[in-house]
Image (cartoon, rainbow, N blue to C red; front, side, top):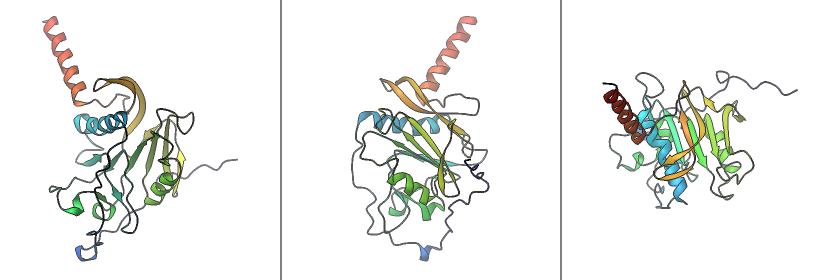
Length: 232
């Protein structure tokens, strides 16, 4: 009989004690940008879709609660290890720095934000990324609550979407892919985004509505205005 995993409340999350400025690690020699391009057009558009829709149409995890979402940005968990660079991430209750140019503000240093991202998404484009192996273990160690693997070409197996939740330091697969800590879900949606028709990974809200992009919201408002004009 498989034991029931502990609840999220029972899980001890990784938290970083906020350090005094003089105790922060020296990052002068860390490489925060290496100008490595994304590997294909689909991945680049998928990253934009996940991030842009949140900033265009999502109110956030709760009133007065900020969030930071981005893509292809290094997440540093140690000064002795290279960063992980997820295709997209979402971190709740943190803000982007007002000045993005100091080196400590250019990447996601866990000791600067006081916590790891809450959601990390990896999009599989080949079998070299080790999304289900090394990366998964490192995100567990880092304390990321939700780890998402989207495998549109089924490179790793028949499951295109896998969502994991951290329980007692170990990832447990969850289905349906609802992330209660964020108040968001994920689903595969077939449609057109930026002139490309494909199966896209999309966010949805508590009511099951897709989180719209800015262009989709504008089109929705245009259609509503046109209907009201016709009724008038």
